[in-house]
Image 1 (cartoon, rainbow, N blue to C red):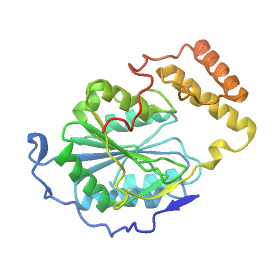
Image 2: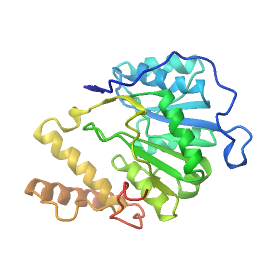
Image 3: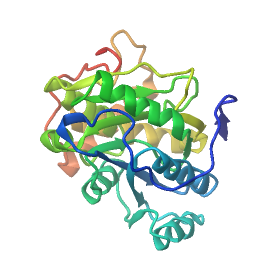
Image 4: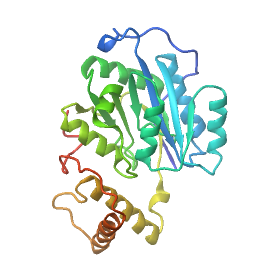
Length: 281
């Protein structure tokens, strides 16, 4: 299911803009930007998603990198078309979301990186351009995150300088909470800020709600186990303070802890397991 924004408008694509809209930040003569995307069976939205991101080239010098999780619904063919046109870089690899984001980051070249903009969402390029301008005006050199809250899928966009992402080690091999894990490590070095979602000029034109992730009692239980296991691996608190914990949640957490122990795949915990991504403005 795709949730649209009624006031979002997409504009026709044109050539790459050669003129920066504000003074070049960070001493750069002409900054470049990379959009790093993931795709996993997003056949219904992938074309519109990629087109909406490519439209940003009207405003910014841009490269786009997509990591496809070996999609089987026709997404690969669409992405290969854009690759063959020279519009995107494409990596095809079965991997976790964290691994995919790191692969895309390492294959990108921009001075600044826009991440967590995946092929299940469609974007509003003029609004993202405005968000980038706001970033340079008020948050230059730091990492910012803005998150849409009016949908069951709390889609976010993160903007950061390449050098800063390299400094904290980029994304780690998590399938759930890989974005939170990055923000927590950025916050630990004092370089993270939350930017309230610009609802009057939304960067998202539409967001896909992945209800299939939680369909069925058995499938939902194992999804929960996977999410809890990644929280345990990264040191993140699984439950909020005072949250009521059901027997099913307790069972899933026990299985998750056993999985991490047996597989011996824990990673260095984040410094603050209670880090709240919207608390640092």
